[in-house]
Length: 102
Image (cartoon, rainbow, N blue to C red; front, side, top):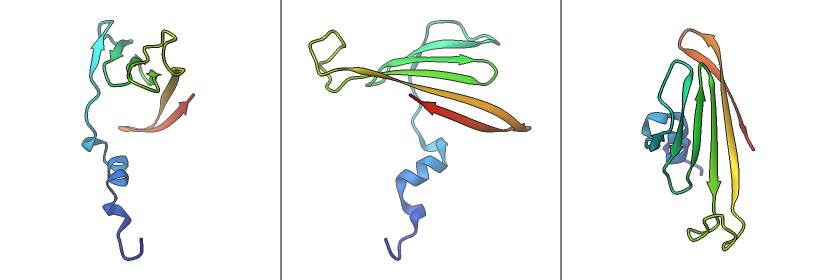
């Protein structure tokens, strides 16, 4: 990409500016408390999100190879993946984020 500024790439811009990302629709399954909350994510690939205060987020996503596969054996091998995010405070208002995808 000679002569182009890599900052013009929209994917790089989204990675750098999370404010441009759409919000994720959640339906609470527990109330929000000082200990955290649990919710169901109502996206194309549904799943669950658990926030365990003060710094742990567990997110499970149910993936399907096609929209007709609901995980009941009629489709093409659905699978589930996990994202684990843990924030370690470093300075006031700042943290180091550790993420594991499994």
